[in-house]
Image (cartoon, rainbow, N blue to C red; front, side, top):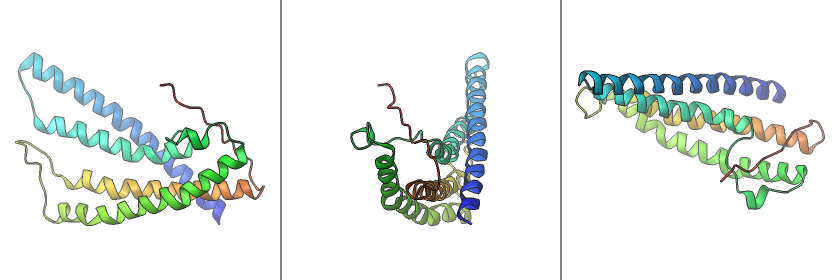
Length: 177
């Protein structure tokens, strides 16, 4: 059962990551088109600016679970860097269980009424020509929930590694500064 859950979450995270890549690509195209229209034809639209903002926000929320899955997320190098794989697995497991998953669930829980209220009130951007706000507000609890669910898959993976049931590559390369 746990292995099926991990495979399902990994597949869902890959799908969301692909969606994030397409959202960023679309945001770039819209940005270029909006800039061209503004400077070449003196035409502008707040809606195009907001679509870019929405797409970028969606890319962040959709891409986070995949980054966690790929072990490319931010961590505290002082605690993690240079440690043995088993120690890294313990650090990951404790961090996932005590920090990431609970905080993601709390944020999703607290953000849900915010998104629901925007939907029920048909909240619109105050900008002229602005967009409806509930889709991007819904991305907040949905994104944190998906990150928590991928975090649970990663916790299961670390527990299986610590039990000796799974071979896991815990290599982490500190980003260039």
